Length: 210
Ligand code: URA
Image (cartoon, rainbow, N blue to C red; front, side, top):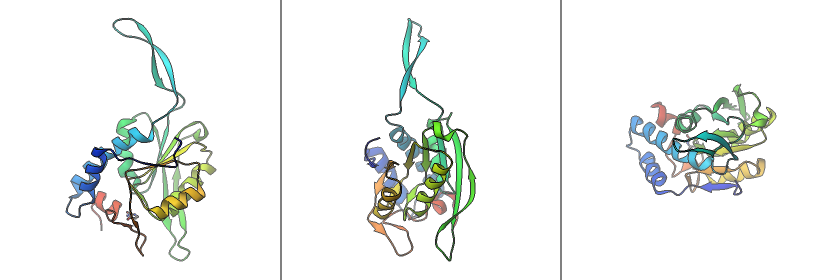
């Protein structure tokens, strides 16, 4: 990927996102839409993967057919909202390896603190796709990518649903080598760090919590 930010403007993605943003969309419908949109975004975030060919037999004759090259890619969910994106992406890439990064915000320092980290082996040989629906301040995304790089990842892409300009700027400063794929770039963050107009708290909306 050559662009730092890819804004996916496909009509299906935009239509589904509008339904997800609406306050009166139920948890069940929100989850279903997230699953569908994740698959469409997975298509975008895997664009340009290295390819090779494999000798196969069709019913007509043998051919050298294209297949994705290299080790199975790694999907890493930034807990907990990342799991909503993860499910849809996994449906499209069922053989991917999966990791999880758990971070919480220390109320005194306001810095992200790691509480869980489990990722596939040989990260250095895989494309790693980190997923989190909301790129808001960028603090947790930057911290998660710091941890992935420390664990050996060198080829990382970041997939989200909504991004705030503040989060994009923070990522560009900290990790200019990590391309971002997003369905929307919203206006700004409010004083509580929520994306405006956004869709509210993505975790609460997908899990039905408050
Ligand atoms: N996380 C969310 O779930 N929503 C936001 O708007 C920002 C961060």
